[in-house]
Image (cartoon, rainbow, N blue to C red):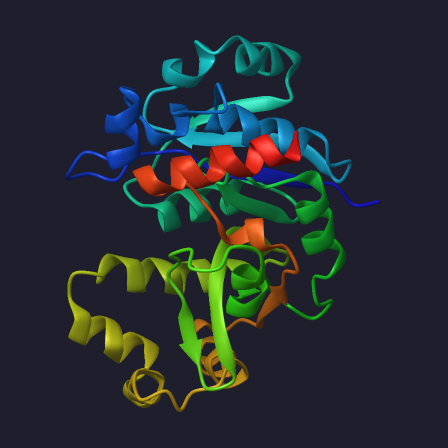
Length: 260
């Protein structure tokens, strides 16, 4: 069985204070407790329960912010966990890790507090064999069947709406090209016209008009990234619920209480 390295993005974006971190009174959103446990600890413990994950690295600006947590300090002492400095953007952190890692890389975020070993196992078991880079998505109907009225950000395609699950796999050397493309788009997130040109004017306009299917979007982005891109359709509503704002804390804690 091939083992993977897992990378958890736990850094803070520059600029305005994160609302979840501010509400919890902590320096980073990753440290905000959900059900009494810091989110990043929940994510690390979930990944540790997945046999295919051989080691975990966490990206953050200050390593001491994590190593002050006894559960993470113990795993670091055992050699299972490493803490690495954050690059200026998520894409740069992922690209640097890919350059330093042999074999496939799983990427998630520290606010993915409802992620379970079953979700990770499902994602890894359904990776398309030919893909270089894969993202987990959940259909709107999957989410709303369990959480009607919950507010999520959806990617709306001609053949359905999907929400991201903050779970990615980069499985081949060609995956680096897809992350380099992500970095170029990310660098221009405050320049909408430049970003549209990078993803393709026709693709962007067809998406805005509701004419673009998911498969068409993947093919178009794959050409520009020079890599084979794919998705895994996740059957778990909770996979798409990350803790991005104060209201999400209430939802996440309610889900965890129901789960026992």
